Length: 454
Image (cartoon, rainbow, N blue to C red; front, side, top):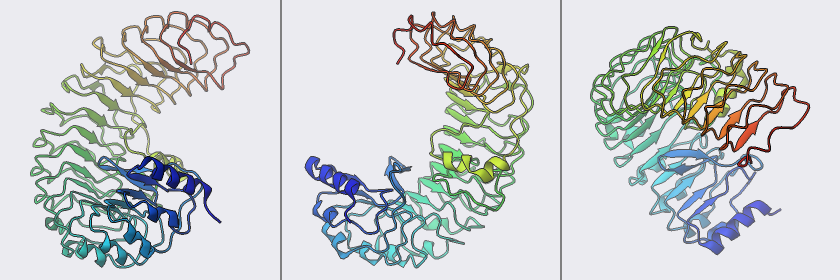
């Protein structure tokens, strides 16, 4: 039986001459023959994710995983194909890939358990994803003449030692998340590296990064565990790092993820003028938050939010939830000295009993997440004139109040609280979205003065 959704997408691609076709999550057992009429096609997704920029983005879930077992010879009718994702399909024979002369980006994650020898005939590959293939070391991979690789994803494997990476001198992005690595080492040859993901391993110490002078993204936390493949071997902490150190030479670092470790004190982040995003959730931080010296920081998470990468499946997995590392022990009365240009802060899931008084200089702050705490009163928000998004859902709030100074507020989330009346919203002229479900409200009222509410 023909797959209707697949045929509709193929027809649209043909009519509009789109260079990208996404057939992920359509429960396909074989590649539809109509695909091979699209000789102009440059990018084809038959798997779980496709390349967007430098990251593999999850395809929209429609039906179920594809289970394509073989590449048909008709694939040769797509001579312009530059990107191919086969992730999650049980394909054993990859030999036809060598007949795709323009192939540059290839996703084989969680596919074949057979040989990867075919890769030696694809020396022009730029991006390669071979996560979830039970790879134990990089010795064989280093012999495949992949000298042009710029992005290599080896997440969700069985790698214990970082080695043999000198075979990839042009690497700009390396993902070794969800492995069995205990020590950071043997990275000094990767002079071009800009992004390094080492989360969900067994690392105890930050070290041996001094030669990575171009590094802009470093994750020793949950970022990098892209597609929800959660290990069942007790990796409920991302790593076991106790101290932030040995980052002095990484002057270009823009994004740092240390979530899910054992850090008790924020230190070692001086001289980081380019740092814009910092994740420190699920550590053991208890002291005052003094980060005013991070002059250009835009986003800070001390809670559960891990942003940018699509790892919600991983973090919501029942094994993780049932064995979740303790949250930071930050108290509401702690001092919060925030960076002067901070735009977004996540203080969710910290057992806060009240909204903390943030420092006075918060003119850039646009988003605050205080969800999943035990806050009972809305307060301490009167010095946030440019706040646009406020998340207070899943708390114990019983009254809407003290919002009159938030003239630029656009999004307000108050669901799963104890509110019994809609009130005190008349001075929020820019409010566009309001979430009040799962409260104790019996009457819809006082919304007529919110002209932009959608």
